[in-house]
Length: 318
Image 1 (cartoon, rainbow, N blue to C red):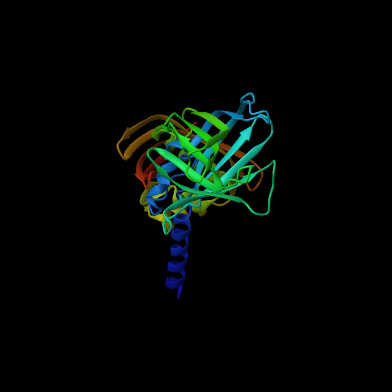
Image 2: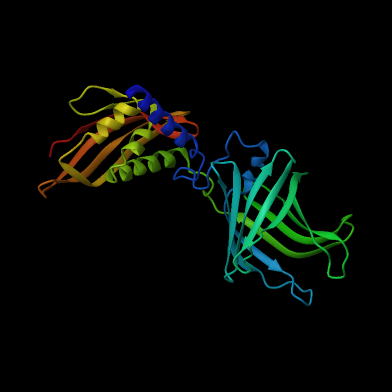
């Protein structure tokens, strides 16, 4: 019975982790595409991140209004199975959408929402990527009653910039009337941190989990076969054993913790890192004790995420 309960607990934790591993994180602020998603999830890959843009709309007299500054952010959501974007404009008008590719119909479906015009039913565009452009349509009659579509196109797409245009077209697309256009440039280092930055972010996340006594998060910071080498203790290996070791401390509450790397060397999917750690604990009797130590960590990249494989540390005497 005990073994069955343990197995179910272990299975639940592995399943829960698997449901969130492609969500936005410190290492990947805008998430990652799920390898189980339709391959078209990568259509929006060059747009993922944060862009600075200029937005122009057409005035009632058919002239173009002055450009409005805005940011346009794209990220993977639903554990990497869909894309969400949002705009924040200098004029206070904001909008966004949820973008899902449905394999059965071989189309993208885009559900649009806006702060300026909240609605109980979201507008829906549908379309595909073709000839280097992402083109979406929604049925819409012209003011004179002619059947047609409102057409949205992403074009001139590369890893640094893209353009977008909204236009009314007739059903044969022989008539085109643009009403909105946007020009965007990607901010540097917004899509993904470098490997070294990811390791530093993982170290900061470890300290944060330690201070919160989140022992599950601490154990998940290691590979499945990870090993720790505490001072004056045998080698401890594996998720459950490592979690038990971190949760077994008593008699004090951690109030400060910091990991300070002195060198990080990346070698493919393996890295080594050494440096200093320091912190402060508050004992149950109210006294506080500061400490300092040195460490060496061997990291392994698993599913595009850096995790500790070997973690060795010991205290430095004052």
